[in-house]
Image (tube, rainbow, N blue to C red; front, side, top):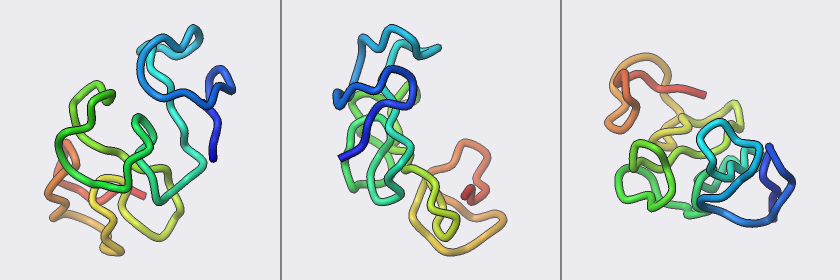
Length: 84
């Protein structure tokens, strides 16, 4: 289980008193969405500012789609580039 990077809470979603977007963010786990804790990728994150799941960085996989690829071609990243 991870903690919010801004306030240390175990909660997900809104009402983080220290986050710039008022949402809890958990960046320690590369296998889970930083905003909701889901293992899913793509659309339908209930707490993300843009509605997309974004995983914590593990330096081996794209945070937007989970691929090990680098460069262009990410179906979920805002700029269509894989991001680690």
